[in-house]
Image (tube, rainbow, N blue to C red; front, side, top):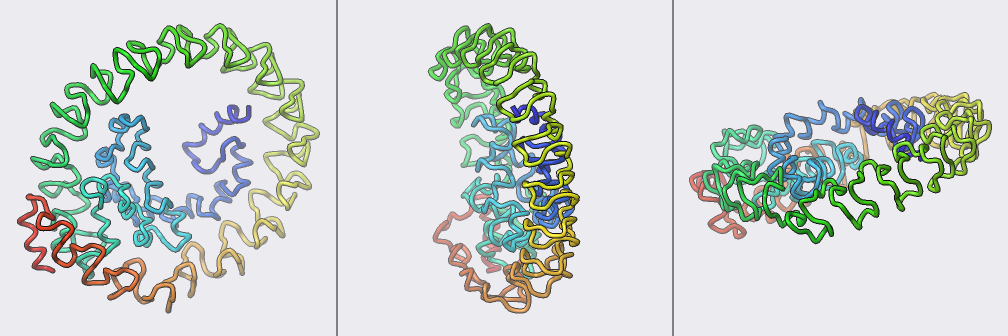
Length: 516
């Protein structure tokens, strides 16, 4: 009952205030209770302003390669994404949505190696830029094959080499990989720009830009994006001119076993449409069958699945005179639950409004009763839900003199955590700013804080952000200039042998060895 009613509200607000509301709760009230409200949520870094601190904002996010422009740099752009099956067209093959269809089955954020978003990564001392070292950044996340570009050729992305060591090091810039005169990691070298990968005559990212490709049995000029542009393809048992987008354009398809003319998956087969299950005259899956509509369940005269039948509307459940599923019946409205004189589901009944719970004189669900407003919980003198009660404001939690929920209390501001002189939550406290963590002279959260750190055998002034700024590191055996992790740094590679590079880069290999 509750989910369907407030689901409408959830859909309306989800687009603009994503994360501000929780499922099945009133938008203005319950969402803020868990600290997800726009004001309260800032404490956890979920607010729009504070969120930028963790690299989630559009401005700060670019620092870690999450911005819309920089995102293409790591191969996460909309065009590049299709390469790994993330596009809307390609994603249909596996029956997944455009976003879910990505190679690792996770969204761009979830797909990161550590499964932590930019906000979560900050807690462990990995900012959007710093996070690259531990594989939390969107670019480094490709090491596990989650990135569209990385998973491509050998399972290792162009950025992977950075984590395990570059055959080149400072003063060349990590941000601009092409600042290195020559790089074997990228089959194309400077002055071609990583940001605009197509500046290279032939691009690894767009495999079909090469006249011929071993990875795909079909080669350019046929487009991988439009797979059916290839006259014949072993990858898909159906060929062009049949369209992947419209799979049914192929006479027969193993991918969709209901392809005409017979199907084992559905006891009814084509030409009836799987999309519209009711197009089949009879179906065991649904005890009611065509021509009744699955979309409008009440179009079926009788249904065992639901205790009520047509012409009563599933959409408006109260149109049914009697319903076993719900303890109340018509003409009472499901939308307005209080229209029912009595309801077993809720301990209170009409004419009290579910929308305004406090209209009920007494409610077992809530320890407080009318005339106190659910919308403004603090209007209740005492509330078990919150150990502090009116007249202090739920919206501003710190208005309460003392709160067990927060170890520090008013008059210090929850919005600015550092306004509290001392806080156990953060080992450093005011007047140092949470927003600018480095304003604290010493911080355990950032192990590289000055002046020395046992956690990392190398300490400041070497920067954790730029791992290669340290001349030698036991943590990474690849401490320059050689790396066991990537044996190709030696400069001879047993892993690849003499054919470590495709024939397109043979001329580019020699300058690299000279550099080494």
